[in-house]
Picture 1 (spheres, rainbow, N blue to C red):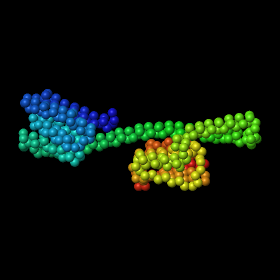
Picture 2: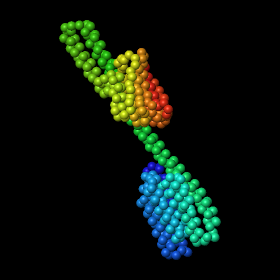
Picture 3: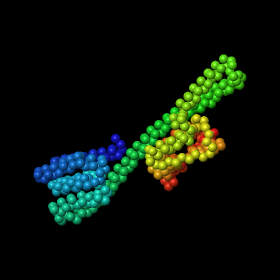
Picture 4: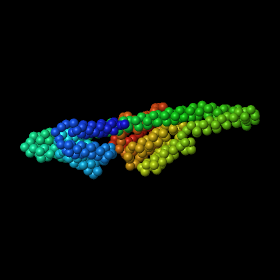
Length: 377
């Protein structure tokens, strides 16, 4: 059960205990005719049933509508009947006021609290008109106390709901960080293996082929010809392994094309236009660097789609002589980059650090968010 639901249950328990206690006191205390007690008990019992089967579901749905208002008016009528029958029922005020503030808007609730406190005054006036002055003084004090209690109840429930929302968001952020950390670890290991295979085995087989062909260009020696064929076969296998370890988007396309495809998919899924611009002289990069750049572009676009409420986005891939820079911008609502979870940014930072890159994030509500990743070669 969430903290907010727990708070509602406490107030419901308070309502039930108060109603039952007042009803029991009417049975125990002498001085009232039997028929008056019967009417009061019937009214109190109906109040309890009305709350359990009608009021309680409306409160849990936060339904501050006509049905809720009619329910409260029904409760006040029953309260009036109970007080008219047995004035001791005035103590039900402690149960009625919290329910009023939970079911109707604040201004309406304040007005109904005034009405609820005037009901005992009217009943007392019918019994003893001479004591109306003191009854009004007590009613004014009760109205002030009831309004303060009601506002405190609303504040308590609102704080409970905020805490419950924050807890839910924190749990979701933790789950997202775990997922992204796992993906980052898997991607980093695949990129590392691909890079190792490319830089060691593939290069080694290429060197073997070059050296053997330099020694015997026509490959007249059958043993040398066999060595070259074997080296070429293993070179092909190593390249296939590098391709298998690379992201699917990079296996059949260059990095700029893979980024364009990701942007096109983002636009198709979100309806937000995303432009892609490539500057500088394009060149093939080590697989591990292309993986980090592509994942950063995809993660940034995913964050825009999920959180930014943007009207447009833009991606820049810039090739400099000694580095490559990726910039993803949007004109959305912005966020606090230092907040817990950070919309998946920890995974992006981890990938950048693994290749010696630098991730910079600028965000505010006026200009949106800019994610910039620069990786040296």
